[in-house]
Image 1 (cartoon, protein in one colour):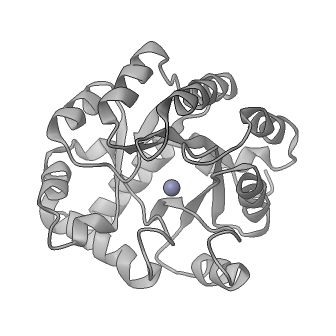
Image 2 (cartoon, rainbow, N blue to C red; image 1 turned 30 degrees about the horizontal axis):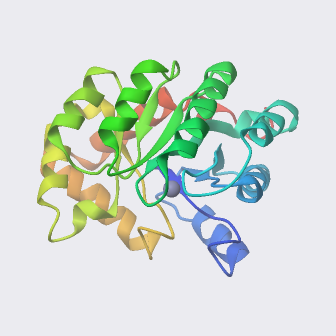
Length: 248
Ligand SMILES: [Zn+2]
């Protein structure tokens, strides 16, 4: 299984090295995309992808964080392991802060992703429609995923129509998840991804990863291997650099 969204960095985790070793050794996880949220965590995510064989990275300035998009350009152009960068982001919009500066950062990120031929990872908090209209003006030419998707079937339809991906995680296992379950039931299987968003949305990747996976299986009536094959091939279609090994 490929975990398409994790935040393993020293800002969020006290014993980072232990966690990295533990997660890198989890037998059911084949690849993990570690997502940066600011300049420091971008550098860390890139370094981790050099040192741990299952780890890849996405570089971005989170909509609620400060940072310069130029710093991503420098990392993506000049790092020796730039082939482990699989996407830019997360980027997007969040109503917890003023939107205007976030829109500027988001547009710059999309433009850089297009230049680097990378997809983008979108964070949208109460802003699905705004993000979709922004993406209409500035299409992400190499694809996009709405991570931790806030369930809304109309927005889902629009994302599907534009060949976007939806990534779901632990919220689909909550008792209150009715609307999220509708999303999982309605999405074309070839546009679905899985994420744990450790340590924010998931406390125990060993148990919760399997729970999320099994919930999707149950809803779509699929065998373990069938679902694994579908989700892995989706992730590799969007994040093409997942094919790059550490030494290539
Ligand atoms: Zn995130």
